Image 1: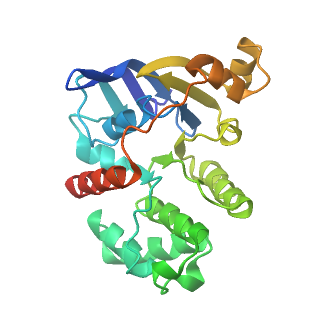
Image 2: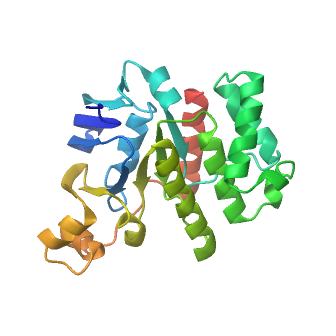
Image 3: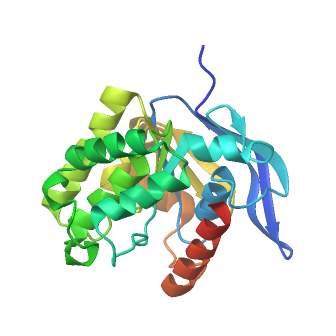
Length: 266
């Protein structure tokens, strides 16, 4: 039996006396589309940062593709791709240049890098716009380019942070068709965070967390049945409450923090 694509065991992360992740344990199987749900400030981002080796846990362990996130960070980074919620492309460059820079970061040989660039651009239907400056792209085109960039080094696990936020229905459907294709053709594991219960309902299993604790983990259908709810959104609200939540940090602050972490990662 293959080891889990992601394994989290008794994970804890504390910041200045605040417990952001509190004894969290779960696993994700190879090829699974796994939903990671929670209100703002629930601990989702902290957990993902630990899995992506951007943060060290206070205690507990986590692994990606069989590699320990704390002791084998380089192997973990080679095994995963990330599609961030906030834009992270260099809009002054062309699509081709963005991908080439990404391939160089991963030390891909030139010939292989060029082959992958051609392949991923064709996969997301951007081959004809490869030499266009990214700032001339629509929002949907930028998101597709970010997906292409995340696939350049053929990761075994792809982290998707609100991957379709702000997209029109047509583009959102095209992105989801692409995700399904990645699972069917490559057996890629997809780890999804989203506030869209419609998208979460497409997952094989979903984990719902709040205040750093795991509240539920099962298929969407099983959770709806267990809570005798109308749909997954009702389950989510039953478990996490109806009160409004504030963001942990503002959008610009989150973006600056993300950039700092990326620079440190690379």
